[in-house]
Image (tube, rainbow, N blue to C red; front, side, top):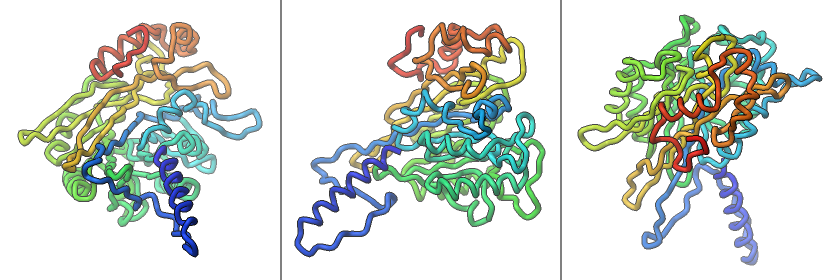
Length: 398
């Protein structure tokens, strides 16, 4: 989102310069996708783009209720209060919309067949997200109508936010999502392993993007032609396991063969490791196997359930050098904690660097669901899973 500020400044500068020339007409306002700054070769600075992504926006009933004000209106901005600056300052910010946001007309519900208020989309957009992933195992929880209502809401109110992973027409499904920032074109692809046994509507096999090898290879080949950098976001793996499954490893091999540069996974609802992979020809691919939940409030109880309250924000800086080669310059994971206090606006997400022993004790999850939850538990799990990919400026307690 910070690109917008740069563009506005550029437009104002051009307008002022044009006004100095007698009789000069004001040029039409340039479109963001076509603005390019020419830099002399002897003054070349590496072009850089920062990408961030968070995991599953899992709208359990308690999360939905946290956004309902006493007057009956909905506002979910509290979910993003403590991470808003990190999101809005990124060049490209991505979130996984785990559940339908089809609104009260189709009936609000939590697990196992989700449907959340459309106002969740308002909060996501206002937080600064540029790309919303919709290919999950819950995509069809409200059928074709749920997908349609959700996509139409995004298109009407937030047309600049890119929706990936669902489609209402075959033509829509064939498009490759390309986001251009600072002269770099980044492709974002999104797939899910399945839809919990719910079949796509008759005649609409394209409504949700499925992990199909032929499709993945074809899409990635087209993305490589159109973009400088290819990101694949698969909804994959086994729930509640901190190690990648054989299925995930299988797909990693395919993604690497296809030439993907970055893979960021969702679905297991717990965090998993980050690893580099490379081909014999030297091509490298970074994989975040699972970012866990961004927001969560499971009704389940027992030892270990608290691991679902921990997530990660992938943070990657890519750069293009003067030879036109795009590589990953820096990569880390910002640890996140879902904090519950109950009531209206009683759920928010903290970077662990801003969390504390006192907040951990005050988290109602400790009292109600899993007594194992503690500041030390969070610290140790983040260290065990993310290891060297934790931010260099580590928070106190690591």
